[in-house]
Image (cartoon, rainbow, N blue to C red; front, top):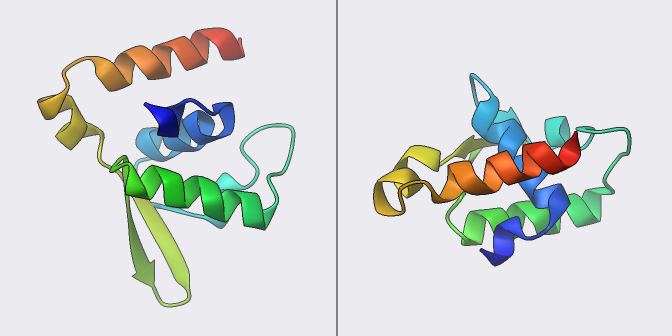
Length: 92
């Protein structure tokens, strides 16, 4: 729950979860009208990874991220959709 308590991390997670393919860390840097500094972005990805919400894989010099939404949904049905929907409602 802590990992998704920060609006920036929820936005990053929603972007990764909604993507058709894995997302690079730099692709998430500009997800709204503001840019997240690289140092903060690294911390956000670390927290999401350690919470088990995303999986990061190295592809050359780039790190690609994929959502673990389906795995979490099996274990905690409805939790992630509830958090994501609350975020989307508050963002509009």
